[in-house]
Amino acid sequence: MATLIFSDVHADASALLKVRALAKDPAFRSYYGEVRTAVNLGDLLGRGYAPMDTLNAMQHLRQAMPVVSILGNHDHAFLHDIPVSGSDAASLAAHRALKGSPLLEEIRDLPEEEVLDATLFVHGGPLHLGDALTDRSFWQRLSNRPGHSFAGYHYTPEMAFAELERRGLSHLCCGHQHTPLCCQKHEDGIIPRPLTFTPVPDLPLKDARVELDAPSILRVGACRGAHPEFAVTDFVRFWFLQVW
Figure 1 (cartoon, rainbow, N blue to C red):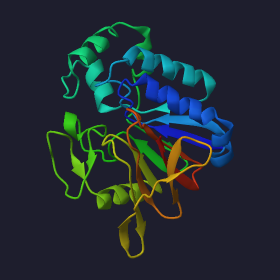
Figure 2: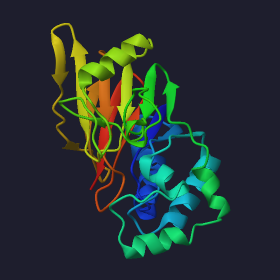
Figure 3: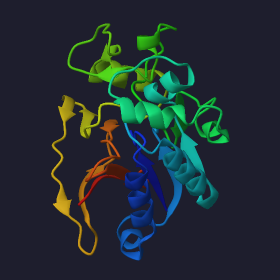
């Protein structure tokens, strides 16, 4: 059995539907297993042009399987009327049409984190820093240097692994920064893991596999645009996926 993971759809319903269709493909199931659960790492809204269709797609996905959803910074900003950069006039107009819609229950009252099988799922970062907006977990950003920033608190891999160890967890899975990344903690230190994507036979996909035999930080790319990215895991292996 497999868990489907996606992040940063940003109101791109067609990308989300493309990923959902691939997960139902028999060839996909033969490679990665039957998808029984999905995890949305946040930012369903913002920047894109089909927010209503995106939330509708999430409702249909929820009818097909259990879905764990995490709050993203753009989701939070929309719910609380907080200006966030990145949305043009057409996107803002499409999102205004959502005001008062029952579809917003899909993002209302979402948690900032979830734990499944010793893996911490968050939108941005794992730290509990306080109530300042850019310190909240859905604004945190993985970086080489720690510190406060108007774009969200920057935390390092060392800080993330220390937090995982404190909480008795093995892996961190996040999104937010739109590019895939993996690093693992070994006896000789924290080692970045290069991701080499190779074509998957019989599917319009490229994948990069990671063995989860060491504590890992797994950052999933954005599920939007012409080549949406997502991931799938059986909690023994983790596949980064790109649609082509």
